Image 1 (cartoon, rainbow, N blue to C red):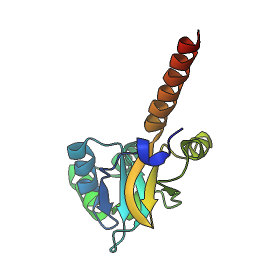
Image 2: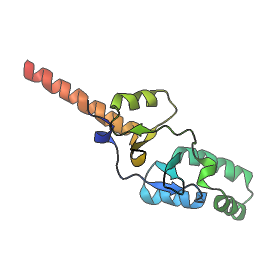
Image 3: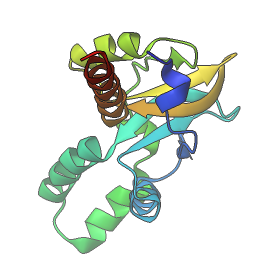
Length: 148
């Protein structure tokens, strides 16, 4: 099976750790993604945000605030760093798809930043892995049909 670099998305969307939550939400919407990599001032990955995590936190913000004005204050005063997953697991472009699958099967992640020589080069998601295994299954099926 091909390595991670074959299946990953190279156009990865990043936000700075100090971007306010309101702008993070705008980025999710405008880029139409479900994960954002959070970077430090050197543009190194330090965390990840998922739209699901943000939505869960939005519910608590809406419950804790008393109206639009206070919700706006909270959204503008909360930074990406406050909500990001800090236990970032990175994979290398050359790593096997099986390694990424093992990490996903642990149930803690749905996307992993991909690096090469410690530089962010992409992201691989569980959907990307489904495509990889679907491709592999089709190749096996084609091989068995040609042998028949």
